[in-house]
Image (cartoon, rainbow, N blue to C red; front, side):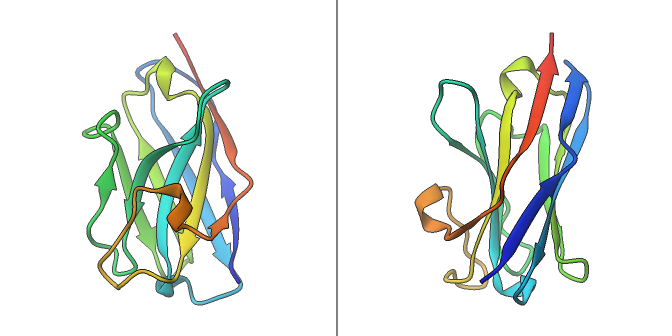
Length: 127
């Protein structure tokens, strides 16, 4: 199995930027499609972004398109989420997720498709 550890969360003002990272260990990172999800207080977890094993086919939730960028560095076993033009509604706990069962160019926007999850990192955007 793979272990995932998120980092980089924090408090930022609206309009600011933040980059969260997810470091993976335990298995060959390049075999895993990766996703970012978030959960705000009192709300269900929602999809944010995903990237295929190959590093291609990035997918984004409509609410973050044009503001967030997902990327991965297979040499560093890390996936990143660069968040720009942050809004208060982006506040939440951000989780990374991984699964090896996708084809090399595939991703999923559904949380149930990912077997492995990190513990999350808090992102708070103040107005």
